[in-house]
Length: 210
Image (tube, rainbow, N blue to C red; front, side, top):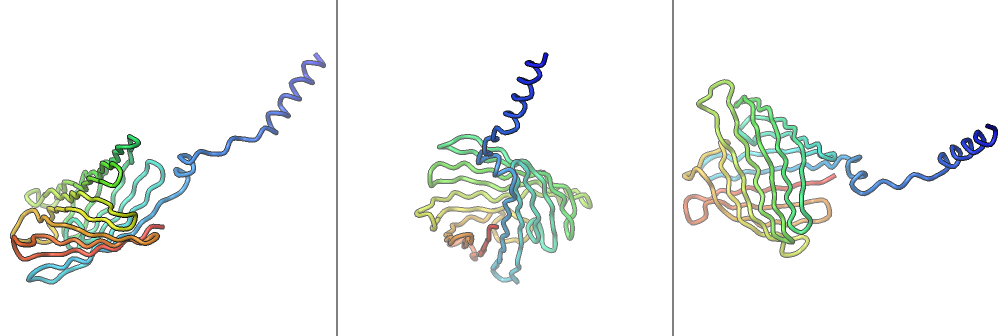
């Protein structure tokens, strides 16, 4: 009995002294928040432009968003979703979300952000359907698909489209192109829509990551 107790005590002491393995990169990523802020300046033909804001926060699978002047003018929205990712060379990222919309438009909005990336090529879409709780006839679908190619680590070009309620043009869906630059934790993108089809509109976007 004395020998067994001694061996048990020694084993317990060794277990306490054995160092724990360092956390993996995936575990470390889940312990920290990734936050980014984006500012949008909408330049519209024959009407006053306006500004919009979006705030994104991710911690592991948890995704949070706050937006203003996005679904509609003088309208905000709050979102919660879950991040999923699959693949190594061909990477699929998808985030189903549920949002609450309030302001000039009030409602509930299921949505989804998704992207498919292969090397320097990326196809992505942000879309949602807003169920207007005040007037069901005002419910609408919003989408922002784009296809981009990174010529360098800091320069990107691509095609984009949008279907929005925040402003109206001669086309229900605006189509155009984009160019973007990045430096450290700052990104800038310029979008031009409807060139050669109707009066063009533009969106200037600047974003910061923290």
